Length: 612
Image (cartoon, rainbow, N blue to C red):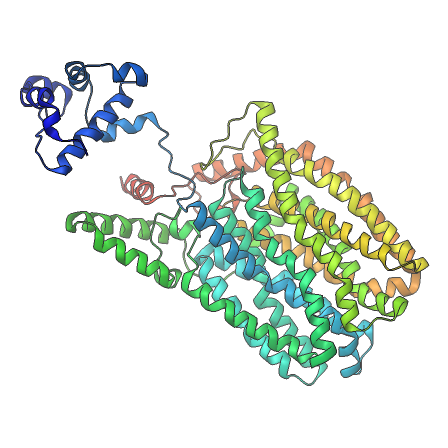
């Protein structure tokens, strides 16, 4: 700390400031300098800021005398708020630090782990369940079909709830339903009860996928969304690797009921830290994170942090901050009227031309993926005579490919985004909202999808004929790894594109994605066994691969006409807003990152402007 006595000239000159000159500048012309450490720190900070404000180089500033520095201070305003003009006035997209984002995405990935875990842990036990409930393989597959139907329907409710009331309430309600359903399945004794409770189990767990996409869109801009989305979906992608092995172990040694008791224990162990520590990220509740959440949107950790922050500030500042936060909370509350979640809200998303084509093709890729998963237990038992544990182990290569896919595709998407931006001269402002109206967003995402679809579809074709001729086990396992890596990577890239097209309602957009893909996937899993019996293994998967290939030109259509459809939607929404149509939902916003006020100060200013 530098002593004030080291600057006698500065003290004398500060004491002789001319009041007329000070009035001309609109600020006080005197600075009282004392021996206290606070005053010394103020002098140092003022000199540093003046050197920046002067716009001169560091070397020229360092050679100035005290007298010259004083003239610079006299010539320019000393109000520190006026110095903010040298930086952008837009608030950061999210105030969460990188460490906080990592924790948030980790919790999102763990929450998303339960939906595919519940689906895939079930596969090795299908043959055992068919025997215990005295039904055929095709009939027991109906539990897969109904699971996938509700896997598509439930996120439409949870997505709308999350975009309306926040992410935390949707997570907590979903896990409550999920845990109750798992307990019921573990105790059920009839096939009808199993069928109904599997629907409830799917309803509780499947919303986490849509919620995860919403959370990532809350905290990450389009330029960095690929990697964060990759990490967020890594949890759901771990499940196909671990779940069949766990299911095989339980079904083989403890009985199939222990599968669901395990799910109850795992979910309870996760939901406690989720309720205590997971912060609210919904931008209609906390903005960019600078507005304190209200009610059940606040975790215990949030509450302790807010309470500590209030104790540390001065009484006057505490009152101003509290009033500002309350005004911001009330302003945001006006934009989110609580109501019964409407599952039909996602229909408006599906009816958009570009989104409809994207969801349809994405669902075809998903159907191909799930046809392999649903038929594998029966084929492995028929061809190689494997039991439940061995069948579960055979899913490991498939799961490993699924686990690697989000990370690889995420990094490729972000790399392609930066490369395209550099080629067209588009400047990416890191950590800020970026205007994507003239950015070729479709080309960036589809450029990652195309090579993955080509490789995955070729592997699917080969897989059918490998299973047809009953080769060594190594061949189908290698092909399953390739399909897990490429088809999942393509699916992940297209899912990110869905969120990019509707960034203000990401959970609703992802719910629309889940609705289409799961309904189509349910139909695919319901008929795949009949197709194999009627056509043979080779021709069945040839047909599936052929359907994907035939509809692949959809990607070219999206790349060519997608940008103008996106721009037309933006113009339509802005025109509706100009007419004062308040019924337009935020999900109708144009593509690009949200431009709504995201911090407390911006919300308060917007509220005051509307009152005037």
